[in-house]
Length: 103
Image (cartoon, rainbow, N blue to C red):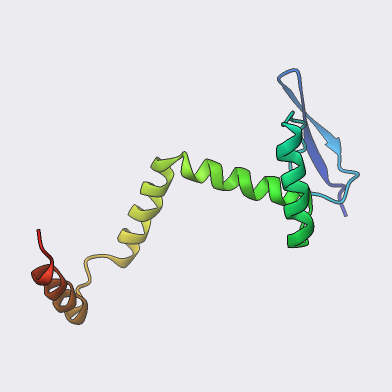
């Protein structure tokens, strides 16, 4: 079994170091206002999650909301997978909705 390694970021350099903790992924230190930390602490306790999980989920959501190109690319992949298949029921239903909509 090979040892797990994590990347350690210091002064702009990345280096591998043995992973000694229970978490996986990049570890980093950030400064946040006390009020935000306290809210995260309460949310984590209520949700039965670790602070790391809450921060990770929040950052993932933030990045997703601020990366519209990735959303567009994902939608394009879905459309490509589905293709130009036409569903008669869906087309007829959509037509009825559009006919009843005031423009």
